[in-house]
Amino acid sequence: MNLDDVSSGKGAEMKIDCPVCGGKNTATYTTQTHEIAYFGEIVESTIQCEKCGFRHNDILATEQKDPAKHSLTITEKSLDSRIVRSQSATVSLPEIGIKVEPGPKSEGYISNVEGVLLRFIATTERAMNIFQDDLSQENGKKVLNDLNKVLNGELETLLLIEDPFGQSKIMDIHAKTEPLTDEELKHLKTGFTVIDEN
Image (cartoon, rainbow, N blue to C red; front, side, top):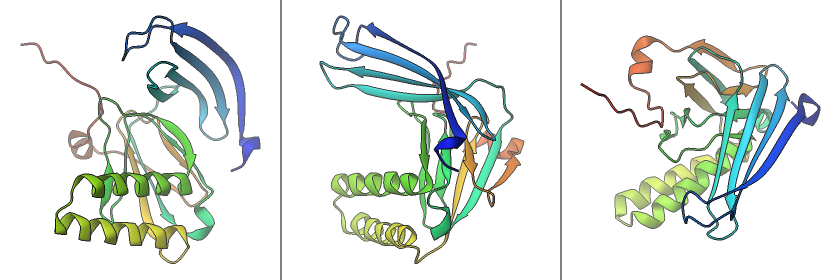
């Protein structure tokens, strides 16, 4: 997939009060539509505050999609393959033992396989700064070593994206897409807070 596979459409920008620091008209809210080949239309939205630096991105597909699981064996040739990850998707490298689940501050993004690996590296490094015990450091070093091997084409591993709202996609001819089972859906986080009224 290349840049010709993504075309941009309507965009809008407006000043809003920052949802974090409360600054009056200090945040810019931007939306942009994109048509992505083999996926459909998406809306990319960004909020960025010039006062406190708060930033939030999100990607929403405009079409209703079924819950889906996307998988790809990462090889050196697939590092440039496009990834659309919605805020509700769980992204994992199960053979390496790393998983990012959605939370209340989860963001959607458009990237490529290499970009996803770089996000995992940054997340692992942050975790190693927080958890200083020997076991965490040992596990973190192993994960970083494996991630760097994948980036350098020395190791192949499975990339898995599970999205209960079907808003994510791996765009590679070798990627597989399957429906999520009811059992798999029960165990996935969505990143949304649900208030159950009785």
